[in-house]
Length: 88
Image (tube, rainbow, N blue to C red; front, side, top):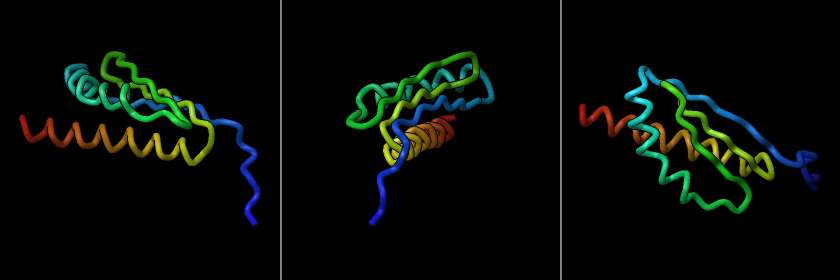
């Protein structure tokens, strides 16, 4: 039988740096709604734009929900970048 994890919670700030402020702003505005409407049963995510960086703040109850939040954030950013590349 697997014992419960000793982790009480996981908090992290992930910084994603872009080529320039314009690209960061486009991606930020593209994914902001996803972050605001994501279900937050066991974790919450906030997004900040600072110069050419997007800062993702994650506060999760456990490592599984933290991993899911990170995966979602990466997926949304990657998709937005791919769509942005198609429009250039």
